[in-house]
Image (cartoon, rainbow, N blue to C red; front, side, top):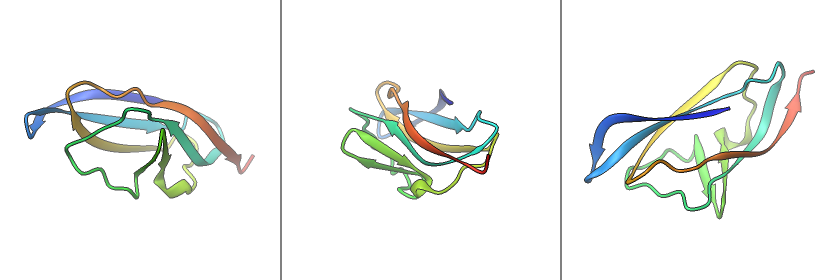
Length: 93
């Protein structure tokens, strides 16, 4: 569901990482929550894409991500964050 790669850029001396979250389900998913404990960034991450709330991150404001669709964002920190799927609601099946 998620992949993280180094972009090759640096922001405030920190490596920039690009994350792509793909809905690999044949159904749309909404209210996608990722576990993101310890996630930090010196680069602004648009909260409309990833909104950190404690140890959880809500993807795209909880709106629906269609089957096979992806959302991408970048952040900058020393090492890549571990973002794990925690929950979602399956819709449209």
